[in-house]
Image (cartoon, rainbow over all chains, first blue to last red; front, side):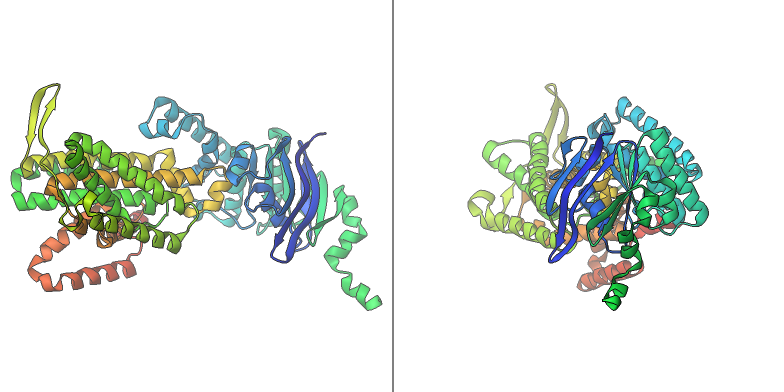
Amino acid sequence: MTALLDVAGVTRRFGGLVAVSSVDLQVRKGEVLGLIGPNGSGKSTLVNLIAGTLPVTAGKLTLHGRDITGLPAHKRARLGLARSFQLLRLFPTHSVEDNLLLARHPFMRTSLLDSLIGRRSAIEEEQAARARAREILALFDLAEFATRPASALSIGQQRMVELARGMFAEPTLFLLDEPAAGLSPPNVARLIEQIRNMRDTFGISVLLVEHVMDVVRGICDRVVVLDHGEVIASGQPDVVMQDPAVVAAYIGTGRRRRAAG
Amino acid sequence: MIQRALTIVLIASLAAAPLMLGGYGLQVLVMILLFAVLAAGLDLVTGYCGQFSFAQGAFWGIGAYTAAILHRDFDTGFWLNLPAGALVAGFAGLLLGIPSLRLRSHFLAITTIAFQTLVFLGLSQWTSFTGGQYGLSVPVVGSVSVLGYEVAEISDIRSFYWLALAVTLLCLFIAWRLTQSRLGREWIAIRDDETLARALGLDATRGKLIAFVVSAALAGVAGVLVAHHIRGVSPDDFTIATSAAVVAMVIVGGRGTLVGPILGAAVLTALPELLRGAADFKLIIYGMLMIVMVTLMPEGVVGRLARRRA
């Protein structure tokens, strides 16, 4: 299997704090890679570095064999990299459908000028995109909300809109930052199903940051564990979760060790 | 449907205005049209794209002085001045747009104030080029010929009003098309969440620059019109006070609605004229109106109406 995304020695410092320290990991084609770790271990920072929302301090990022380390966020998105945000992020005044449509803008063949002067090709492309957006929304049971402003939906629905938006952009790699946060158990089950669907039906590789262990066990092909910005374990989910270093990082044997020593 | 009918009725009555109004009424209407273009242009930058600017008066002045200087040095007429004014002001808009890529909110606002001040100082102090405080004179539009046939003579207020109305409607149509296009959707996205817009692959840099350039070019068009309307230019028409008035029109009318700022331009241009009888209290009334509006309706009149309907 070839690596779709290669993260090599990536480091990010905030002043004196090393949030991500020389991390190496690969996301392979067609897999769901889980990225787990205790609070503050640098998971979201790593996602921001990969997406280009934050610049790296050191290290190299390669997507499809292309060095993307110096590329701004919007150019990475155009190479097929989509992301969701830990704190929900939708355009609040745009309709649900327009939220999806915006993710497709960078890939449209007709120019802004075509759209401005109302050329037939631009109108047709937009109509086709809208029809496709409706199909995707239907997959997420959101069809009836298409024309509502995104801010009018419930948190669970907004999460689904975020996923639908990512899928609509037809990415090769989707970075999901805690998509299960704040979801009710039935919605978590649906989320797992949707992510599986993305991988199996649409061939989208996923880097999944998640706290909810049911989601990690239910869907991830492999797991990488971060602690204090460093990779401390990686491999099969069930194996990794038995790893003493991982258990220690989560449950915090530090205190016990100190007490024993 | 109702909106379309209302628009047609409004345009028809504006076109028929010279049949009912005298010279003074038409003078006021022309100023309303010009400020409608300025306010609609600023709304693209501020209301849609979310970038503050206190420089619309400067772009207005750049358009007006482009017409005056081209006429003085090259004896050009209105029809050449019009695209030239749009072009020069648009280029100035690009220059102001570049810092906007790195600055946000207050810092951007201060930069635009500095730009506005620089332009004013240039107009008033560079006497050899701009005529300084005395300004420059500009001729009437004169005869309009198509393929050698004279079709109109624009030398009185009535004919100039129709010309101004036609150019204004064209400008407002362009602004409206922009807001309805893919670009308009991207502007709102940049305004609401620039980080997200970039993460989705939208080129926020390009979106902002286009907004600044188009907004300034529209102001430039209004500038060429005002130069030929009052048949001259002087720096005192293009101060920070003018820019602040345009900002007020956008805010009172309702940011990001296009109709709101146009309405704001009409009210805030007509109001000082209506208050001429109470000249001593004019600024007090104006100030109180602003305070009341910003306190009770921060989203503007049209913004409030739109929200209530939704």
